[in-house]
Image 1 (spheres, rainbow, N blue to C red):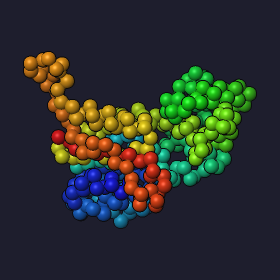
Image 2 (cartoon, rainbow, N blue to C red):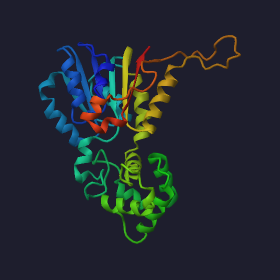
Image 3 (cartoon, rainbow, N blue to C red):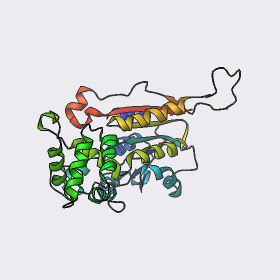
Image 4 (spheres, rainbow, N blue to C red):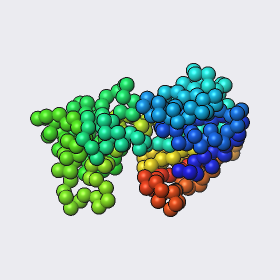
Length: 306
């Protein structure tokens, strides 16, 4: 979303972090607004994306530090790299959640059912279990919970049963094998009109394989402590689960006293840590969605450290 850099309120001499470096688009927009005294730390868990971004941003190398990291380790890795001073020094950070266009388009990554490929789905291919390994290990009940919770899929039970039946005879090892089992599990008349019937199942598995929700919660907690007063947090989410976590965290940190209403004086001592800048999530305009249809579901929330 083009609004993301606007909501960061870039200061030319400021210090910023882009926690989803991806192919470097947002990082480039931030760096172009920084003077020679400003700095940006770019983080990503995907080694392939980092190398592409590094080449794209080479002209800014004197003002850019790149670190391989997932969200939950971002604050610790920024400190360990010496990229910033101690806590409370960032003027802002950006998180653009979800899977990148590069990850979807590269068939070998296993994120998409548009091409047949090994069922991987790991954002960091150097660690963790693949989606194919997960399907071999989970029982039907566990798989039902994952598809329902992370995919918000009404046919989760039928899909999990179908997958379990299949894996008892032969493992599901490719994207098209999984997509075909999901299609068979959902009655044809209930297929969604504009999306592939396996979309929600693929989303759920990807989120589970990469522990995206847990990493997001931990990452937000850690990065809040990196913001100086007046520093801004900007988060772009693409589905309701992500947006709900961001909304709840921002709301929690915007509250002050939590004492019961009938207490005559505050005894908890809690003070607000954030001020929400967006009462409702900012959605992309028609001009942006016409250029980038994938931005249709984007929701941006911004807050400022008190």
